Image (tube, rainbow, N blue to C red):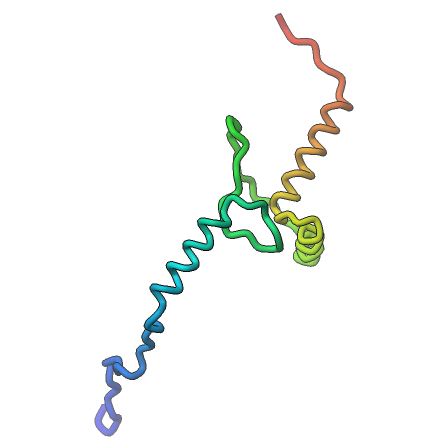
Length: 111
Protein backbone atom coordinates (compact mmCIF):
# COMPACT_ATOMS: atom_id res chain seq x y z
CA UNK A 1 0.00 0.00 0.00
CA UNK A 2 1.27 3.45 -0.73
CA UNK A 3 1.94 5.57 2.29
CA UNK A 4 2.90 2.69 4.64
CA UNK A 5 6.61 2.36 5.34
CA UNK A 6 8.05 -1.08 4.61
CA UNK A 7 9.42 -3.06 7.51
CA UNK A 8 12.93 -4.27 7.21
CA UNK A 9 13.43 -8.01 7.58
CA UNK A 10 17.14 -7.66 8.23
CA UNK A 11 18.42 -8.48 11.71
CA UNK A 12 20.60 -5.78 13.15
CA UNK A 13 23.96 -6.98 14.33
CA UNK A 14 23.64 -4.94 17.52
CA UNK A 15 20.44 -6.81 18.47
CA UNK A 16 22.10 -10.23 18.30
CA UNK A 17 23.43 -11.30 21.67
CA UNK A 18 26.87 -12.79 21.79
CA UNK A 19 27.83 -15.41 24.37
CA UNK A 20 30.31 -14.32 27.00
CA UNK A 21 33.86 -14.78 25.76
CA UNK A 22 34.66 -17.30 28.49
CA UNK A 23 31.72 -19.66 27.81
CA UNK A 24 34.08 -22.42 26.64
CA UNK A 25 35.96 -22.24 29.94
CA UNK A 26 32.70 -22.31 31.90
CA UNK A 27 31.43 -25.35 29.98
CA UNK A 28 34.74 -27.17 30.38
CA UNK A 29 34.74 -26.61 34.15
CA UNK A 30 31.11 -27.78 34.45
CA UNK A 31 31.89 -30.91 32.41
CA UNK A 32 34.88 -31.65 34.63
CA UNK A 33 32.82 -31.13 37.80
CA UNK A 34 30.12 -33.44 36.48
CA UNK A 35 32.66 -36.16 35.65
CA UNK A 36 34.02 -36.02 39.22
CA UNK A 37 30.58 -36.07 40.83
CA UNK A 38 28.64 -38.49 38.60
CA UNK A 39 29.50 -41.54 40.71
CA UNK A 40 28.88 -39.89 44.07
CA UNK A 41 25.64 -40.69 45.89
CA UNK A 42 22.83 -38.26 45.14
CA UNK A 43 22.62 -35.31 47.50
CA UNK A 44 19.91 -32.67 47.26
CA UNK A 45 16.76 -32.23 45.19
CA UNK A 46 18.45 -32.21 41.77
CA UNK A 47 20.54 -34.84 40.06
CA UNK A 48 21.88 -34.36 36.56
CA UNK A 49 23.41 -37.77 35.98
CA UNK A 50 21.80 -40.88 34.66
CA UNK A 51 20.40 -43.17 37.37
CA UNK A 52 21.99 -46.58 37.55
CA UNK A 53 19.88 -49.47 36.36
CA UNK A 54 19.94 -52.76 38.20
CA UNK A 55 22.06 -55.12 36.15
CA UNK A 56 20.19 -57.74 34.16
CA UNK A 57 16.77 -56.13 34.60
CA UNK A 58 14.81 -54.69 31.73
CA UNK A 59 12.45 -51.85 32.58
CA UNK A 60 9.48 -50.34 30.83
CA UNK A 61 8.16 -46.80 31.06
CA UNK A 62 4.55 -46.14 32.04
CA UNK A 63 2.83 -42.80 32.17
CA UNK A 64 0.44 -42.12 35.04
CA UNK A 65 -1.70 -39.11 35.85
CA UNK A 66 -1.37 -37.63 39.30
CA UNK A 67 -3.34 -34.59 40.48
CA UNK A 68 -1.16 -31.48 40.32
CA UNK A 69 -1.84 -30.64 43.97
CA UNK A 70 -0.46 -34.02 45.01
CA UNK A 71 2.68 -33.69 42.88
CA UNK A 72 4.05 -30.95 45.12
CA UNK A 73 3.51 -33.24 48.12
CA UNK A 74 5.41 -35.97 46.29
CA UNK A 75 8.29 -33.64 45.43
CA UNK A 76 8.62 -32.37 49.00
CA UNK A 77 8.50 -35.87 50.44
CA UNK A 78 11.09 -37.12 47.94
CA UNK A 79 13.43 -34.24 48.77
CA UNK A 80 13.06 -34.91 52.50
CA UNK A 81 14.07 -38.54 51.86
CA UNK A 82 16.93 -37.55 49.53
CA UNK A 83 15.33 -39.29 46.55
CA UNK A 84 13.91 -38.37 43.19
CA UNK A 85 10.10 -38.30 42.93
CA UNK A 86 10.14 -40.91 40.18
CA UNK A 87 12.36 -43.21 42.22
CA UNK A 88 10.07 -42.87 45.21
CA UNK A 89 7.00 -43.70 43.10
CA UNK A 90 8.78 -46.72 41.60
CA UNK A 91 9.78 -47.95 45.06
CA UNK A 92 6.22 -47.60 46.36
CA UNK A 93 4.74 -49.47 43.39
CA UNK A 94 7.23 -52.34 43.68
CA UNK A 95 6.67 -52.57 47.45
CA UNK A 96 2.91 -52.72 46.89
CA UNK A 97 3.26 -55.39 44.21
CA UNK A 98 5.41 -57.48 46.56
CA UNK A 99 2.87 -57.06 49.37
CA UNK A 100 -0.04 -58.02 47.08
CA UNK A 101 1.89 -61.06 45.85
CA UNK A 102 2.22 -62.38 49.40
CA UNK A 103 -1.56 -62.05 49.94
CA UNK A 104 -2.56 -64.06 46.87
CA UNK A 105 -2.77 -67.82 47.11
CA UNK A 106 -0.49 -69.50 44.61
CA UNK A 107 -2.26 -71.09 41.66
CA UNK A 108 -1.57 -74.65 40.76
CA UNK A 109 0.33 -74.87 37.51
CA UNK A 110 -1.12 -76.93 34.71
CA UNK A 111 0.86 -79.93 33.61
